Length: 65
Image (tube, rainbow, N blue to C red; front, side, top):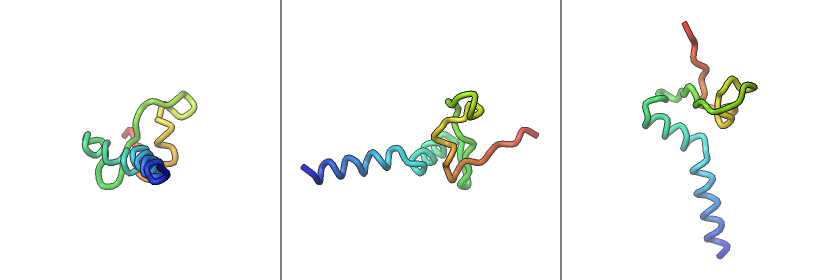
């Protein structure tokens, strides 16, 4: 029983990791070369950037040139 719970927690960690998020964005075409512009869904305080993206190592702020 303990092993099943441990395996479930490990799967949950993987599903909600930055690597999993980056892979999903890469499949959608929004991320490339280890850089991602983030996803929309935050609050006014985060500039409408999703809270998940704030401490992500793949997040790169997009310039508006």
